[in-house]
Image (cartoon, rainbow, N blue to C red):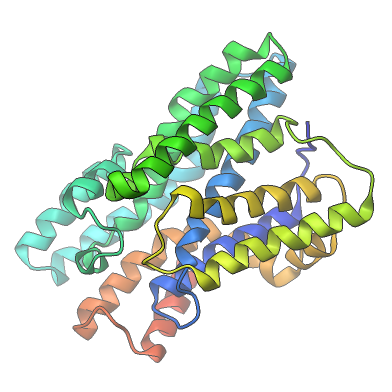
Length: 329
């Protein structure tokens, strides 16, 4: 299994995930596929959480209560700050009907079912109506928390059989999820985007890296190639995908496999890609990536209301990004 010590390159990878999302949502040119940053986050999360789970389960120190307590301390303070601020500002800014919808979405977010709520109420993540939903982005938090309701129990049940059977089961579940996502790309595109069953495989890829499903290699050139290709796969998705790309499905393999490849290579050697990701600037952004992600969308929606248009002028978009980055996390 890969090392679980602190890795600066993963914080840098978080920056590579969050910045395209923020830039795309702000309407900046050139980041049409920035939404894939969420998929990068899913893979990172699957890797890190599985690494911690397996370490504690194998050491006999795992506690489900402690696991959820840590998740709550990590997620809830910043999330509640955003929710309280959003509903308070919405009280003064929003008309009655949008304010009612905001209150309903706050409840859905607190219960970690906002992905289901927005699937039913908004349907299309890229639709015009979605631009005015202050908590739309919380769908991804709900996907993660729904995944982690059952995943720790699965790891505990499989731990006694060793890592081999563990990763085989995770791989099987991930393949089923991927197959479902590929089918739903055309059959149920809105459900495909928002719901957990078609996203499990993205977290599963990260989990497989943590479980040692991919063997270590000693050839430095191969690891360097893997790091470069992984970076290229993510950037290609960011710059070439757009809202017309059927997603997730097959298209999501590009950023997800790219992310897993970067993590896998970086667990064995500090590659050039890992060195670049470990830069002070990217690591600094990565360290605030969660709070930046939480704040950026409601701030952008507020600026849209104040501007009277879903499309923000460049100067206002930059101002909204800077405000989001300066808010506490």
